[in-house]
Image (cartoon, rainbow, N blue to C red):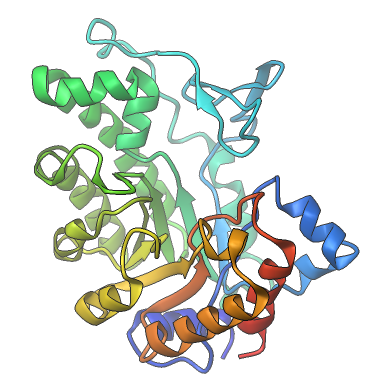
Length: 336
């Protein structure tokens, strides 16, 4: 099987020849891995089964001050400590300017240039192409208005909270429609709803504010014949029945620190596929090499049984992971 066939088989809940996998690295761990392998050659032979593309326009990120980066919405991120994402350090939307705030142009042609190039690639038919759209709804809302203010508005100023999310939804639906006009395989939405102990805004408010809007987003993707992935960190398994109901195909990152990945497979594996499962909080930083190998093999054998699984670290591999443990993950995944 090629990459595309392997992923399609797994997401159809059938057993592929090998469990598909995908590995990403943060900026902090990548130099360590290059040093560990003695060069960058390991990246070319990594063997990831997913081809991930973005939706941001050209020059979407600009360094406006040292370590301060501005995104396409105008949000400024302090990357002094975290070089991959950063911390929001400005606030753009209030109840007073919500209706006049100018959103980016979802029709900007440069957004779709990587899609055009990927679709004419000689090996297009062997690639499972996922278009990744991060900070897609709740996260985009709090980056624009502040997380505390957004959560307070969900209780004290519902009109404002609903209108802000609706404005983001309007932008999203145009973007999704444009993306899905291309011959891609899936869209992955990034929207962290959880923390280590549960859903940030609570399940009831998630159902009030988030569910009806992501239902529209997922529905648009599904109507175009594509699959839907969601990346949501944290303990959000109580939302799985709702997510299955509105058409989710694949849940990521599948954190073993906050949910029993084996029990989740048993309970939801007939209706939902999982992407992740390899611990980045405990196993990769603190485990021993053999322990890492044993756990990855168990995930492949148990969670990967009968499809429904894309093996991966539970997040882009962080800087505190041991290089020898990361190499052990790669070795097991490649040796299937």
